Amino acid sequence: MKAEGGKIGNSLCEEDRLHTAAAILRKAEAKGVCIHLPSDSVIADKFAPDAQTSMAPTNNIPEGWMGLDIGANACEQFSNVIKHSKTILWNGPMGVFEMHNFRHGTKAIAAAVADATQRGSFSLVGGATPWPLSTNSACE
Image (cartoon, rainbow, N blue to C red; front, top):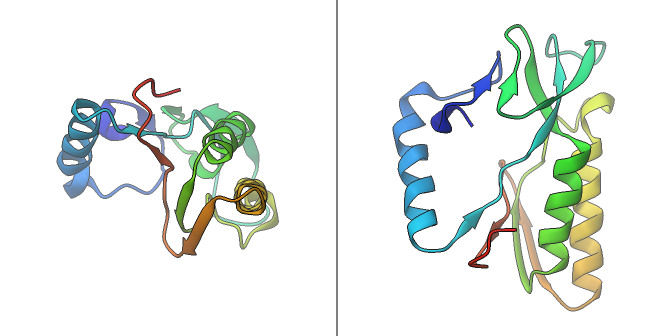
């Protein structure tokens, strides 16, 4: 989000990788590969189970707050991408799933992957943090 000019508040960011992220996004767009980034996030005022939480567009997280999970809209959007995918490579949680307030996104995406797999999709689950990819030219 920050590579595209968005505001990410106090969310983790590898500043030295912003140029690389922007280049990947441009290259994907040129090749018709859609990188689905979360539209909304569950945000918190601190990295703790007892943090105050709120919702925000992922590209407009206020200063002093950090994104710790994907929001309800992102869960729905990602689940829809997964539902229409034949191959799913999932490399990590959607948020800080170890904390109760920030595990909903991971659980929702896990359920979507399980449903798609039961319907015949191939799925492979690993570690780290992913964003779903799609080769649909219409990036929906």
